[in-house]
Length: 173
Image 1: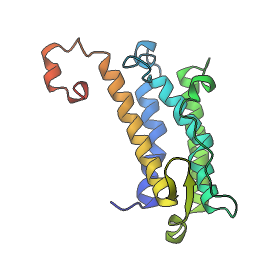
Image 2: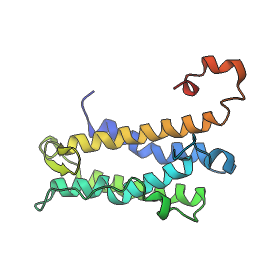
Image 3: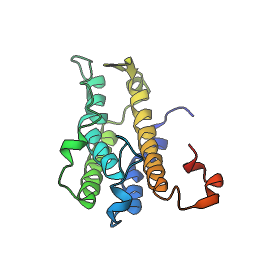
Image 4: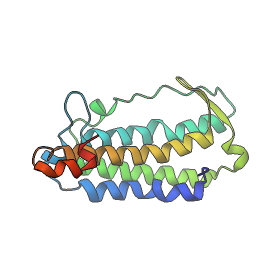
């Protein structure tokens, strides 16, 4: 499917609500556990969403549409480990929802047309990327991390489901 802002907006608008319904008021055993090693917890992912709202999507959109240097500032994929420290899950969910509302309002105000969607910026790793690609990536980024949170949570019962594990695709990836 070709990127269309009107089709993408419902996903971007609903993500904070989906995550709030999924995570609010859960015991830490659901939100503070990972898949082992240095994988992320649900708590870490929400912090990552927040950092993206502050430093990635709209700031990069403005770089693309601006008249100055088109180089993106590198994104710190691990900033949440210092920025979220000491905050509760509910605080993070509220902060994410607030930042997302603000960013959606800004995106709607800017309302990039087809010509604007073809403008490009320079990603530090990928080189030239279009606004269309950036905005499509924002939507897929949301869905990727919703999937990640679901997978991490499901893994907490990896052994507990017994023989049903054979039918639980989320546990067999």
